[in-house]
Length: 546
Image (cartoon, rainbow, N blue to C red):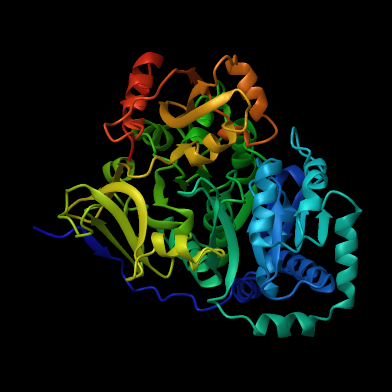
């Protein structure tokens, strides 16, 4: 029998450049081709124009005293300024800290303090998110934060104007002092302590991941990629923006946050060849009553990722949205993010029922979670991966870094997987009880600890239950203190504005006790099984995914 281990090809060499140098090379090669289209802001730039804008923002950051290694937080939905800051920080060696735009005060404070951000770039408000109010509420507790730039105010123009005092030569000197192995990005991902951990990524890791993700999609400078997924996540900023800048393809941004009709309208108007989304996004697009009215013949490929991909949804995307070469990608923030992906030339069966094979220059293996020994192909075990794409570590957290990456450099995913005889991987479950709701990773402990702060709550246990739209929904089993009373809606209202909306429990069950093992451990598996039965979710639980 063959061991469940695979090594990606080395035919395409790794890029040994910084992100800034790679962007400059692309801008030189494709100067007059369209680089950046932000439909909702009516922005349209060539590669030469985009590169020049990045330079002006980089000069503004330098003028404000941002040095190599300084952390700059970016907190907003998908606006052009997000992307400018992404490339400008990379050009001058500042470390961009991605902050989820759905974060509220407690989460914002944690991310800014833990990363030690000197500057935060954000907008004053968007829909129900009062960003300025939240910043002001926590600012006194942020000792490292010196500057806040609201890009929808005069702040942005003043930043650009300040940069006029910085010369091209100063920017070049800074850029030349950088190394591709330098940390350049911190992304917060939930962890076993219940608090987010800052996965720290280098130029080399995310730039090369973008290269091979784009290669799997068959990208060239003729492609136009519609990016409705959030920039704060690797899906948007690496698989989206960076994959475009590596190949000279066009970044097309349809809307600040996902709107299915706006996305398809943009695909039609901009003649996009590729479309991204988590499964829930594609479900929403397929569910539009006027889906047939959109001209989607330009579409060729795209990526579905972020959470388990229902096989039927993949089939419909191929059949009804003209995405004959759509791919599935699998990974985690800690791996920049992709380690396996299907290719445009894979069979439809492989593209709808697996997460593909290992990317170039990447190793993958399936191990027995108890012994650490590599299992045989076809057997279940924990998915592990090693290579250029594995994070430097968790920011300022060597203990948790060592727990995630073993002594031989293998990143342990916590996901249960199988590998077939041809090397195709299938994700079959999770060792950890991480919840993936609509592409958002949520760790139950974080929500449990917040629920404990309600004066009526004595104990709380959070689980994920299956959901046909989001993959999983959050459910809380709650024990109240003696003599206390509380309703579902009162507890949800307590959460609103304090934790991100996607972390607020969808289902709440008030109980007097939890199912326990004989040693006193709570049996979350039993809780989940009972909840599925009581809520009538057996159909959603049976949905096939890749």
